Image (cartoon, rainbow, N blue to C red):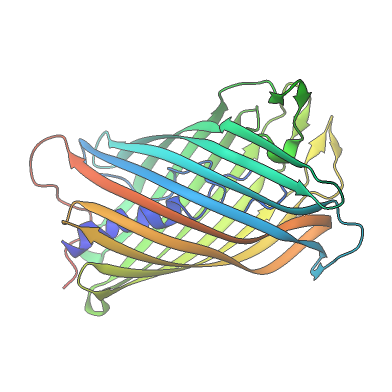
Length: 321
């Protein structure tokens, strides 16, 4: 039972803590690309995930240092909700899809009484994952995956006749492709797991010839049962983004390196539904030019697996004693 619960929660932990990030400004924890971060599912099993995230930013950086000179914005924030589904086609092949909605994506200006806000659907995603090496006896898994993201609209959002700036657009309005590598190793005697997730995203130009910077993300997790029904997870994640390009010309004040610490607490509800609460805390920032950077991000998620065969689900890993 612990192994089954843990597999739910590991997915949720990474699901709501990271993803494909398309806006260079203050976008840590962006929920786009939400369903591509865990190993394969059992054949004919269905996973449902719903989550909510709030992000807040109020600090400018220039390089590795804070700056207070000539600041355009006072702060920015967004509120986002997403859903994701995964289906086990076979014991080694899993198909996933996800989408999300920004309730708001807001920038508050510093020297004028004005706030700019975008809202709406972000992007959709489809991912295929293959269990290249699954060894239940050794509690080891190596999974590879590839996928693409698609916009619901290729046109930038316009509010009251004015086209919104890129930092508050709810979507990239462009396609993207990605590749990922997932490693998982269990230690039964310690009731602990170590795992890592590595992902690369390549963004294409939109119809206005603007291209958001590609991203490389690497995460290391450790999970440990605290007491019955409660699991703690600690994640250390690096996010490297290349510069944006406008008509193939690199844009100033874009591109960065972030190092983020993300503690998480998970709770099993009636051994069916699983709740997760986490917080993203940036611990290192290095930004090209001058940019508004993330201060914190919090997320709440809910997940459950369904066996469509109506037979007991046998998990990839045995129960941790």
